[in-house]
Length: 116
Length: 110
Image (cartoon, rainbow over all chains, first blue to last red; front, side, top):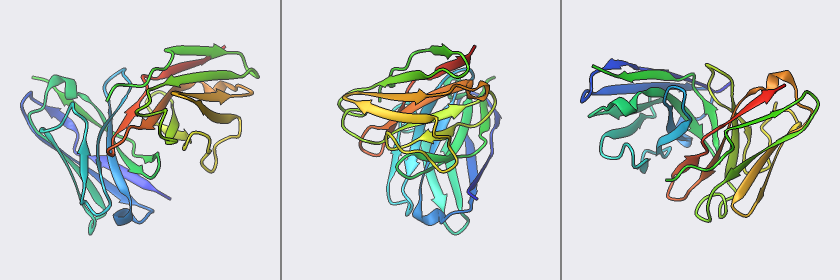
């Protein structure tokens, strides 16, 4: 059974940083591309970033480019999202998602709140 | 990375069928057969219902079906049930390893 468990969310001041983690199990992590998708309170889904299985390629939404870095540790079956220069509009639930030809398995999400 | 267009809300009575549209462009929905649909109940994570336009993951009811014509994809739910009441999102591959979502549709079962 595929399991994705996010952690690392919390309250951070504008301009601050946060690192999200996602522990994966139940599939061959190193063979799977992974993504982060976020959902602001009461709003829709927004794709944030994708990383290939080998970590050889990364891609970002324009809204976070230059402020966010996606990475992974295949030896630990863990996905990361380093977020810097956080803004109020980054407030959202961040989901870790396994990617095949669709975003097929989702974690339960971790809430990031950017506020002073 | 413009969002796909979905109706804000749709409704139907139990047993009826409803269709939710998802309109993109020739750079996403129109060119890639990588449209997927997600169901989200309040406070829960999204769940994949349809992938690659028409395919259903194991365990998803065959009351859910997908289709595409040109730049518009559609999700049809037949034999509406109370538990189908949820938010539904479409998504499409948009090239260069990027993905785009629709704004979401709230389905109300009357």
